[in-house]
Length: 73
Image 1 (cartoon, rainbow, N blue to C red):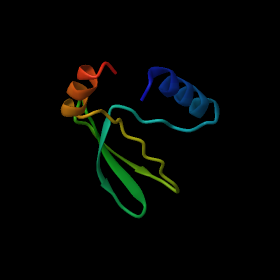
Image 2 (image 1 turned 90 degrees about the vertical axis):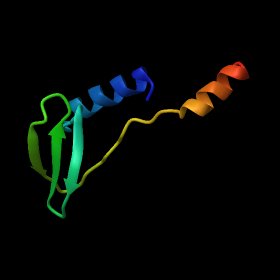
Image 3 (image 1 turned 135 degrees about the vertical axis):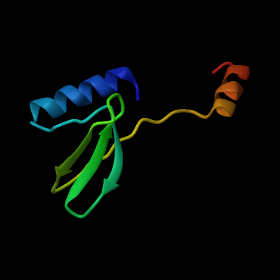
Image 4 (image 1 turned 60 degrees about the horizontal axis):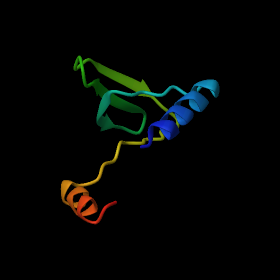
C-alpha cells in the first residue's frame, strides 16, 4: 500500500482504539481466536476476536514490473 494511506489508516485506527498488528504471520484462524507468529522473533501469540479485518500487503509480479518499465509506467 502507498505509505501515506498506510500511515493515515494506522493513525485513524489508533485514535479509534483499534489494535493494529504489523510484522506478524497468521498461522491459524479458529472460530474464536487468531494465532500468529512475529516475523522477527518467531514468538507465538493467540488473540480472541469478535471480528477480524485482515489486510495483507500486495505487490506487483516481476513480469508486470518489467512490462511497466518497458512501456514507461
